Image (cartoon, each protein chain N blue to C red):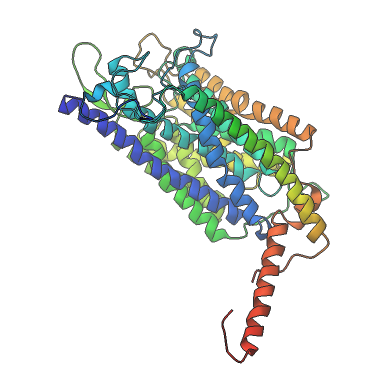
Length: 466
Length: 69
């Protein structure tokens, strides 16, 4: 940090990631508004607290072991090598705390200069992805899952399974990048498909909300209690998504092979991109999704807003490289796919996905990963010329790993275990009465008592206020 | 007496390293943190089950108020 230019690069990078964190915080605000708006009023507070408390739980567990997983598991382990050492990322590392760089046992001076300043913000940027993954799942299971069960699931996806997939397919040396040429620059698969698959795994065991399906098996519509809150929540998720995209980049990196030097922004794979590229493509894929969502849902506000999100998600795997008009069409096609899939799965398997999370994140995410295999066929997935190039087969396998192996399967197993011990679903009587049963009655009693006291004080000669 | 591993900012900054108190006890902090998380999960699980039992016994047979005051 003694050279001003070197110091500026480090401090700029630190600040760059820091800015993405409050932006991504808005994703969580949006998810909370969206879920509460979608739930019925007798379940509002339970819905809100269920989602809110994943914040501290995923945060502490991501500190304790999640961050280490990302750096330790790129090889599988056992696929392209063993466990990697990651002493800056263990929960007991001196670099996982306030540190000024310089001499520390086990670290070179260069390591500490870099990691002492970037570790915290880089950890937090990944942590906000963790919250997002868990929050995606939260919406699908509202109004009948026990908070205890959901919070265990949140830790599993937020601090274990998604970060394993990031280590495998969203790391410059992940085995999926090396062997499959897996390319997923803005996380169609590594966040959205895995979270969608995870939600589907939970829903399969959890079952639908009471009375969701008629006796003949057709679905009843349980409309959002507050459509305004749902739509503004989704709007806030759009805002937070900007931070998500920016956090997926490395802002300042020498991308020139050989002796020459050329600094640029890169993707997480250290392949070149620019902020302009992702700005074009974010907005065009959002627009493609919104336009198609409005069309297929015939102007339904909930599905139109959700489709904007699905449009971005469907194009995200290749949004570092697509032409903006390609991004628009991919977003639009992804919306048709996810919308049709949502209703087909609901009819065929009686899956009650309360907010369409499996569709918007899972199906659109899988679509995005697979389409990138065709659109970017033969592109280098990495600056390393020895690694595989992008291919339809590599992306197809990648989508399967994300959605099924690390998404659906762990959630299904956890849900089966919790269900076995009666810890998955709220008792039927509670579900019928409302998950906020105690709170609603207590509030009504408090209000009635206050009203009575106010009326009584009005009759007192002194006019004393109560 | 100091809980940190330095007593002034006058020396070479690169020699300071970690600036939080009780450097060297990070593994202990980690164990305590993990224990706190597990304890919280277990307590919350019991609390949730009891909470619903109490709510149902107190209010289970009463209709929900139609609007909040």
